Amino acid sequence: MEHQMFCYQCQETAGCTGCTKVGVCGKKPDVAAMQDLLVYVTKGLAAVTTQLRAQGEPVAPEVDRLITTNLFITITNANFDNDAIIAAIRGTLDVKAELLAKAGQADHLPEAACWNGDSAAFAAKAAEVGVLSAENEDIRSLRELITYGLKGLSAYSKHANALLQQDGALDAFLQRALAATLDDSLTVDELVALTLEVGKYGVDGMALLDKANTEAYGNPEISTVQLGVGKNPGILVSGHDLRDLEMLLEQTQGTGVDVYTHCEMLPAHYYPAFKKYPNFIGNYGNAWWQQKEEFEAFGGPILMTTNCIVPPKDSYKERMYTTGAAGYPGCTHIGGGAGETKDFSALIEHAKRCAPPQELESGELVGGFAHAQVLALADKIVEAVKSGAIRKFVVMAGCDGRSKRRDYYTEFAKALPRDTVILTAGCAKFKYNKLDLGDIGGIPRVLDAGQCNDSYSLAVIALKLKEVFGLADVNDLPIIYNIAWYEQKAVIVLLSLLYLGVKNIHLGPTLPAFLSPNVAKVLVDSFGIAGIGTVEDDLALFFGENAG
Ligand code: FSO
Ligand code: SF4
Image (cartoon, rainbow, N blue to C red):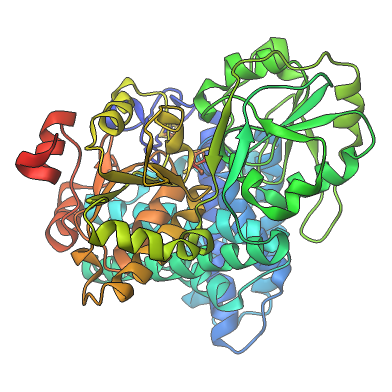
């Protein structure tokens, strides 16, 4: 008998409680089970590496990367390929067995560190080790909150690793925290403290990725991005991995094949290094959840470098390729690890057989307001705040998604007073980045810093403004946080903001199902976390009587 799945890691979880039959995302029970097992054996490996470090033994960077890749595979919409997940479990068990032999005091290690089994045993084991295996709902909630934060942190680490930047202290923490979720002796208070520590390393992880990106590709700068299409066949790149995009751009030079970004790849256009490629045309389409129509219309091959994959229609499935942690059964996967050159020739040859993309939109977008660019404009911005031309900044970073409730963000952006500026990052921007919201003295009213990890830029900007205005507390700034979340990268962004002391964050469209009432209460009482209401009520809350 097939074990019932249970997953509640993303905002779209069924009924705001948990997916139990099939994922709203399209994840099937067999894939859900193997993802649960992959998380379990990865936690076991983390317990072994944490023990080895305590013994003073080094842990190889490849093992650190195996752990982050495994967690990334289990992020919402990243990998639907059961065979790939089973192969990852198998590979992890092999590495774990080898390291276990070096670890003393194996009897002190949790069961997950010692468990091994052949593929025939995987399904039965998976049924024992899912989310619901923790009986106490507060312990379960905190373990999952920590695990999801670490999944997000793993995604960002993996992107930094692809640019050959790795932080041993960050990996050691990630593994220690992962192993701690197996430790039955930890109390609720200890797990709350660990949750906040995850936020500290979240800041470090996003800083590492920011350093990796800007050292490799320069600082994002104000840029205009075309929304229309050219006359050549094209390849559409989605997901978040800039190194994959770079390799593809290199390999397409002189082939007559153009390259377009989709969704979270849009901010690649803001980096100076990518502007030198004449075939890097523009951005195609919108946020991830609209990909079925958009990928159909694109007509050429699509490269998914990470999530968010929507199960593809048969009509374009053979044009969809995956790489890195992403995977989908029946789609060709392009291999290659950190430091290796991936071979994208199959996509390029495929593109040559395809018609040019159908145009969906025309016009352009402006973005590139990451920390260096905004700080270069600091005088102008500070002046606008002092003169009252800018009354408030509204951080609306995060994710977009299918839920109709997310129309709130479009309506909220439209209804904001005209003396406010939206600071954004992540795919949440697609809810309002094509509205004509105008500018304030030449400063656009939507400043896009980049991908979801570039929320780090927004934090750097806030801390800098705090300094410039001579404020003691970051919460004294005229900044409102109204963030939309969807998957686990948003969890690490949220924990990072909490670690930096940001209070009164509004989180929508619904609060996470994985927060038990008591854990939610801790977040509300300590940090003033709140949900969203109606646009009218929230405007009144944020702006009082002067909301118009
Ligand atoms: Fe969006 Fe998907 Fe970037 Fe996420 S494309 S939802 S938070 O993967 O990572 O913002
Ligand atoms: Fe459901 Fe989200 Fe889990 Fe998919 S990732 S199974 S939609 S909770």
